[in-house]
Structure formats: structure tokens, C-alpha cells
View 1 (cartoon, rainbow, N blue to C red):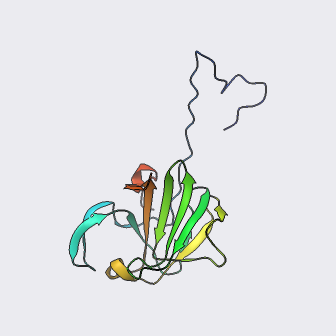
View 2 (cartoon, rainbow, N blue to C red):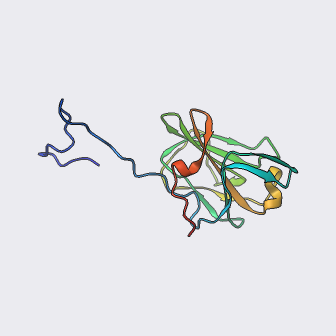
View 3 (cartoon, rainbow, N blue to C red):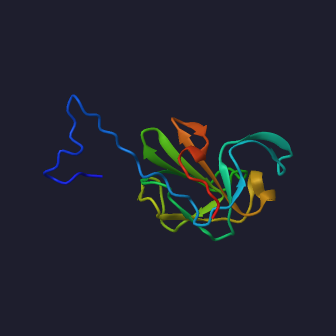
Length: 159
């Protein structure tokens, strides 16, 4: 928010503190239906308990996947069959979002700038380490390359 020109609002002097509140990230899929939350869970595909480093959103194959915030495509990784295709967006200040089990939109490549709400991919056929869960988007947030609960940045109310 930029204050109007002739306004003292937002000016910083010794007696005033400026607080900027970000708008916040949007959900990576339009219809929010949570399949698996962040934390310890049983991965029935791999047959063991493990830490789930993201949130799984139930979504049909072909559902559009949105950039949750402005950023730069850091990578599109396709080399691990257990992970499926994985897109990572760098949002700056050590914050990244990760989208797994997707098919990137035509022409998307590392280095591309994206805006919040841009369609970056679609949900792919279930594969890899979570295929028994059916089609879904696996979504992670990294802060300084450490996985944190996406609920810290997203309002995860089912719609």
C-alpha cells in the first residue's frame, strides 16, 4: 500500500514505526480440499510412517495449479520417478514454494517470472511416492531451505 502523495501516513520519523502487512499467499488450487496435512503420517504407498513436509490438496487430473505469490521459477525437476514433476518458485527473502505431481504449462522454464495467481501447471496422473492417494497436488513451503507448515502462510479453509 502506497500512501497518497501529500500524506504523512507511512512516513518514518523517530517517534513512529512503520508496519507493513503482506496480503498473504493464495491457495495453489481453486477448490481447497485437504488430503494430507503437514506433519507425521503413514505413507501407504511406501508402507511406513514419515514426516510429510507439505500439504496434499485433493485435485483431479488437469486441475490448474496457481503460483501462490509473485516470484521466479527456480527449477522444474523431472528426474525422480518417486517425486513426479516438481516446480520450485523463489519468492525472495529465503521463501520458496514447491509444487509436486504436476505437469508444467507449455513454455514454462527456470528463470521465468510469475505473478500470484498465474497458472504454472496442472495436476498430473498419480505417480511416485504418493500414488495410492490418487491425483493430488503436493505443496510445500521452504524458509531458508527448511520445510515449514504451509498453514503459516496460507489460510487453509476447505471450500
